[in-house]
Structure formats: C-alpha cells, structure tokens
Image 1: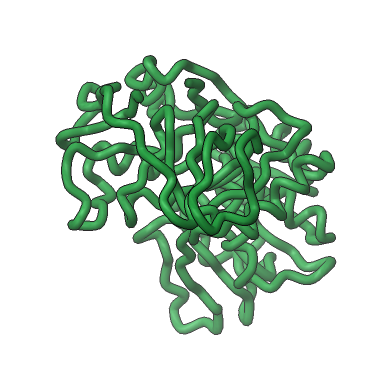
Image 2: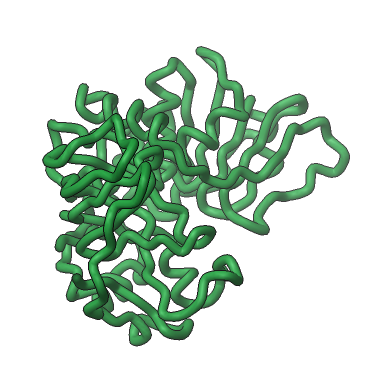
Amino acid sequence: MRAVQIERHGGPEVLHLRKIPDPAAGPGEILVRAEATSINPVDVKTRAGVDRPNPAIGFPMTLGWDLAGTVEAVGDGVTRFRPGDRVVAMSAQIATGLGTWADLVALPESLAAHAPETVPPVEAACLPLAGLTAVQALEPLRLKEGQRLLVIGAAGAVGGLAVQLAAASGVAVTGLVSRPGHVQAVLELGAEEATHEPERLPAGGFDAVLDTAGFAQPDAVADGGRYVSIVPGSLPGFDGRPVDARMNFVEQSGEQLGELARLVEAGDLRLRVAATLRIDQIRAAHELFERGGHLGKICLTF
C-alpha cells in the first residue's frame, strides 16, 4: 500500500508517498481502506518539527489524524463494525505514531464511528479532529442558553464547528476572524455577530471565550467567566482577575465522533471543503495549506 511518510522534519519536500507493507486488523481493530483525509495544523507542525511526537515514534513516520473510508476487515472481538461499513476516525498520530495518510489503516474500533450517510467521504474527512476538538473545548466552558461566547478564529475548521455547536444550543456567539472577507461566512454558520477588528470587542463582554487561533483576548471575558485555548502557549494572564482559564487538548473518542456524525447526517452541522487534491499531491497540498486564508479544509483523496 501507499503511505505518506517523513524521514526527517522540514518543509513539504520531506513528504514522500511510499510503498509499505499492508497492515492487518488485530484483536479489537478494524482495517479501513481510506477514501479521504484532510490536513490539520498539527500535521504541518509535526512535519516541520514544531510539534514533536512521542519520542518512542521514530522515522520513517506516517502522518495524518483524519480518516474517512470503508471497513475491509475486522479483528477478533470487534462488535460495532463489519466489512463494507463506511466509517470516520481520528488517530492521535503525534502520541501513538498511528498515521492515517495511507491506503489502509488498522486502528482500534473505539476510535471510529459510522460515517454520515448524507455527505461524501471528502466532506466526512473534515469532521474527526476538528469536530472532536470543538466539542471537547466547549465542554469546560459550561455554556447555558443565552450566555455570550466569543470564538477566536471562528472562520477556521475548529472555530466554525464550535460556532455551529454553540449557536445550536442557544448561546449568543460572536466570531473574531482574521480577514474582513470571512465575516459573512461566520454569520452564515450561526454567529449573531462577527468582526475582524478585535478593538471593537467589548471589554468583559463575554461569559466565555474559546481561542482556536492563538490570538489571545483576555480583556474580552467577564470576571467570573471561563476561557479555553486549544493552541499551545497561547493562554494569557488575567492580572489576578477571577477567570477560569485552561488549555484543552483533543482526545480520541469514537463515541463523541458518532454523535457529531449524526448531527452532520441530520443536516445540523455543516462541513466545509476549501480544496481537494490527490494523495500523490501531498506536497502541493501542504504548500496550499500554509498559504492560509481558506474557508474550509484542504482534503486529500486516495
């Protein structure tokens, strides 16, 4: 089979599509034939050496966190899936070394969920990491209907899903974006307000802040409010103000992914694709990703 691997850290030139042996489904695992995947910031940072993987993971290293495909085989003890099922999954590659940018991926069934039947694999591949990050980052904010939430990076993959999830629960969402051309897109996702001008945000105007972009806005959260960032090193200080502030890192969960997939299938959660390339165009895909400014994800097909 083919797999995207690196043998050292660096620019897109270190990415290679190689032939490696096919994996097999072990006990409790499913073997998935990949149909699509997508690029996340962690993939680019791992390639570049900014985010360092578990020291036990050596080279050559297969990259990738997102997976959409079809089950080819199941291992002993698998109960939730059978061959022919369409699935989505997220693998925490930087921690486990199990990358998803490969024709075949064997992974624990606990990481997978049935794919939404109403969208093609390319769209489904946008869901795993971004969706799990969004829903898990919203949990510690403990938002109630009518409360005010600021989402920083609201036009991005994680931010856009967080806007939709929060707005659907009756939260009044304001989105902060980096470009004026992204304001309308965030309003269409369900935000009540959106701006590209942080100076226009009211001081203490929000019960909670979710930073998905690493652009800290500590003055925006009210005293007694909550502040979550998903970007390492971006949690600000609050000068002794009573703010519940924390970092949040995504965790693997097929159960939560299944809940998100059902929202997509019902039409209650929108997935956005900015561009689709073939897996053998992986270097060009990374170059496109790093140019930024996309309203949607850069996806890859197999």
